[in-house]
Length: 356
Image (cartoon, rainbow, N blue to C red):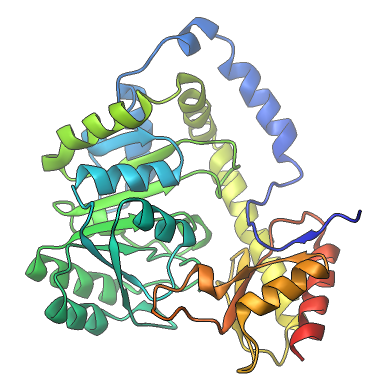
């Protein structure tokens, strides 16, 4: 049986990562007793110091006391929801939002209300409008390189959304899973509104899927709730993974890998632009996925079934749509699940054949 062409996942591993990581792992394992101990819930002092430095920007310093170590990004998002006591509440989201946040919402009985988006991301006027007609408690957003659209929210809109959040007393949860691909430095919502924002930075995409460690920034007045939720959902972070992460960052290896992934993403986007010339698609300039609009007569769920039979795996738009009824008019094509780009190109040619 032939291996399917995987255009679902975008966790690219670079060719040189293996050798570099082996050397770093040897260094990390040099003090095994340290790795067998337990760290305080939310991370050790070193973890928080490294995290604060990594997440700070000029004009927006991060206090180590506001940094918490969680598991992967999913875990940190759920910790934010539970700590802010948003279960059974109403959350505003982009009309196309992260599919696993939809799953978390179903698990925690969250009602999702979609906001309109354009080529720049969430439209502030849409958020303001739904706040008038719904009892909105929070906003979940992927402001920088959104999944699936790849949009980047301009600073002016970020400030406008902060004003709306303050006027309506909204909690903001920002998942920055793909923000590392954007080379323009933009403040996140915790930088702009630390009194009401939870910010999640995970490392599965920037480095590798096995680095199940994330940073969570949380408002000072939620410190006890975050600590309690982390303790009850994971006991504490893994000293092995947290020390690996600290060494990746302090050695400069994390920054090098991120820059190489930005370059690699740009190269694949350029190739896809040629392959999909004449088709309606969008993607971030350095992104590892694209959003392909379908002809009106084709539904994404039906196309997904047909592509599976052809040995091509994609994600239909129904997985991302927060609307009712769900939007069927697009698919997400990931570019990082196949290390050999010729297989990505082969998969795209099959997609073109089925939608033409």
